[in-house]
Image (cartoon, rainbow, N blue to C red):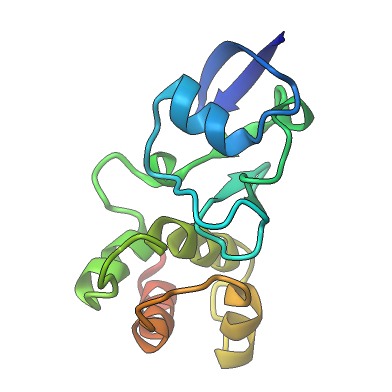
Length: 153
């Protein structure tokens, strides 16, 4: 066990955990933020995606010690009121069906738009590759990303 200092959504947390614990479990079980989901545990589905220093990463396979004192953003950190352009577009396009994968999908889309304000279809496909939606909402996801790029401030 070790004290790990985390910066999540601009707040600082000190948690006493096994340094090899996946970041996902630190976020959910020790910090109490439940928006980031467990999907596969092997970084293959994308449900656990968060931003690490602005880059999308899979939190289920990233040891918490590797992210100490780095800026982590979870789905809860995009906005307090669903006003982030991607969240607004997701709502307008009615993207979720079951919704389980959507926090990871949204985080990947937000990371894409932070780097590329006007992505084309190939850019979107590349950024969203490996984010699995069992309900098959991919066409709505793509429409929402395009809408968010049009409405981005």
